[in-house]
Picture 1 (cartoon, rainbow, N blue to C red):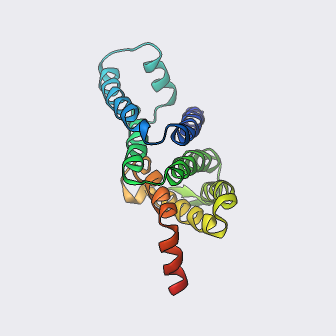
Picture 2: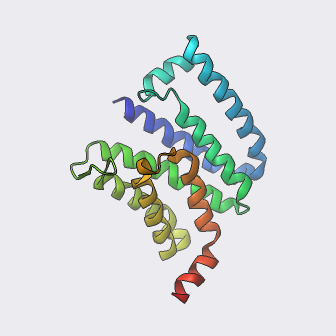
Length: 191
C-alpha cells in the first residue's frame, strides 16, 4: 500500500510539474534549484528530527533505506532536462511520460505475474509504461512517439541494472530523444 501512495504522489506532482514547464518554461530553473536545496536540507533534517507533515509524508511513502531521495532525484532530472534541452515541448513530454509511465509501471507491476527476475521487473509493468507513454506521445509524434515510448519503457525496465536512480536520467532521455526527432528519423531512414 505504501508504494501505491508513493506512486500516486509521483504521478500527481510529475503531471503538475510537466504542465508547469509548459506554462513557465525555463523560468522554472530557479524554483527547481531552490526546491532541490530545500529537499536536500529536509532529507537530512528528517533523518535526525521529526518535522510535522514532512516526516509523516515521508514515513507514509518511503521505500526502505531511501527516505525521499527519489523525489530529489526526480527534481534534479527535471532540472537537467530544463537546462540541457531547448525544446520546452520535449521537456514537457519527457517529464510527463516519466511521471505517468513510471508510476503506472510500478502500480501495475506490483501485481504482475510475469516477473523477469534478472531485471527485477514485470512484463505487466513494462507494458503499462509502454502503453501509457504511447498514448501520451502518439497524438503528437505519430509512430515516432511509439518508438520513443518503446525505448523509454525499455530503459525503465532495465533501470535496476543501470544502478542509477531512473528519476535522474529518464525524463532527460525521453526529452532528448524527442528533441532530436529529425536527426533520429533521418538515421532510421538511412539504415
